[in-house]
Length: 241
Image (cartoon, rainbow, N blue to C red):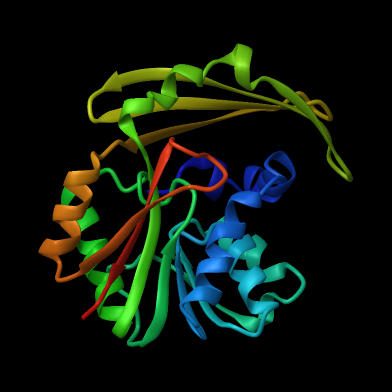
């Protein structure tokens, strides 16, 4: 089940404006170029920012996400007709053979159920051509990122054209290891409506992720550092033999 920030139509419509800095995707664009990927599966595509970056470069992209409202936002964007959008997840994909599968941002950690996680890895494996790669990131648990998820550090007011001012902030709800839950609150100044979005992320140790990948048939080629968040995240590069 997708979080409200992705599946509520009003929140999905302002998601990009509330998080405009997507320089974290630059590394993924470079990896697509590094691996010569011409066909890419973007798992957890959200509002389609990464998928459209690739499509603008002539890459054939399939974007899949369980949040219908976010998929609709992606579909309506300029160039959205160049991407194949699927409302769903990686466990029930149509037949395809892609060069690269990706899970950017929080997509991998948002899959908290162990069986669903294994099924997602397997679904991506089946979608890859032999020699194709799966690339995704997860936060290093040792860095305890959740300690910064509070109102003091996250509060901001964003002016959005055609919408007005939107207040937003995050607060930690619970740490029940390896699950960490938090809540975003959004207040729309135009009518005072307040909406909340509850999220839970699963923090996995590097060795656990490597073992999960190997169990699904992947070869773990390398584990990189996230260039925009050095020392805070693992970026896994796994290949289908």
